[in-house]
Image 1 (cartoon, one colour):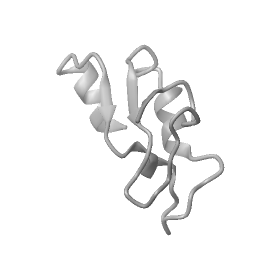
Image 2 (cartoon, rainbow, N blue to C red):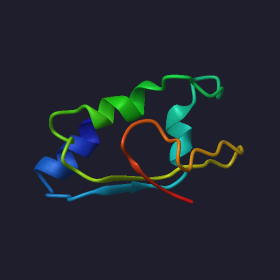
Image 3 (cartoon, helix red, strand yellow):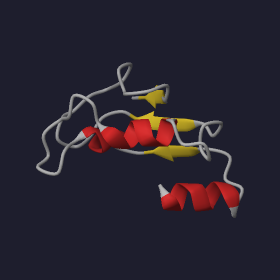
Image 4 (tube, helix red, strand yellow):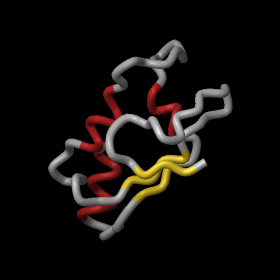
Length: 77
């Protein structure tokens, strides 16, 4: 979160794309979470709410969230 906010405020980044973003929806032990906190923290951040977030919504372990990634992120296969 701190890095994203820094890139927006100081470096004027106008959006982010995350490869293998479904990893954001896994718990510490690697299991998928029903309500993962990180995507929602990013979505509801006052500093990031107008910044486009693009998720490559799958990961190397087979989790596939295209069309169902948490929040209002744009998803790409």
